[in-house]
Image 1: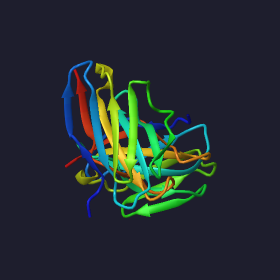
Image 2: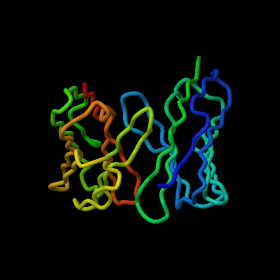
Image 3: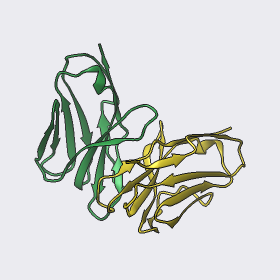
Image 4: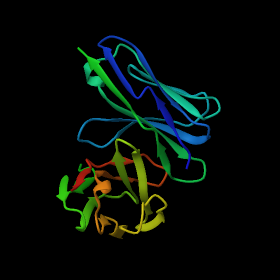
Length: 111
Length: 113
């Protein structure tokens, strides 16, 4: 099983600050996804990146896939309390349909 | 438009009892996934079905766990006998294809005492 390491594990910031979450692996993935999970709910897909070096923007969120397709980052600009949640990265193995999830980054944005 | 439906939402049972978790995928989706989430191990894939057929069950922890998908609109995950270390949130997810976006249900929080 390919492993994904996320950092930081916990992040508490003030409203308006910027932040970056990292997702790293020694393995190559065919694609990488970022999910956001709120308490009592299942993860919800935010974005899928497929091409090495790809950058996708979703309002204040910027996602990047590493050139070698082994790592990814999520950058949030001017964080808001509504961004609070557990952010999970998930890599799709090159050999099939299995998604491997990182441990998650618990983000808290304080008003 | 209903999403993935799971029942029950919460289950508390005693060690040794049988537990059955249920999932109704989104209509038209042909792939279904069962995951387990814990603080220690994060979100782990247990088993994956495509067109009602189990494709990858390598994540099923041991013989106490079994999953079935008798038709395209229903799946069960059974634990017999249950143990305290099975306590976790169990998620069901479905997608149009095995490679498509996965839509997660709200999860079943299982507590085994």
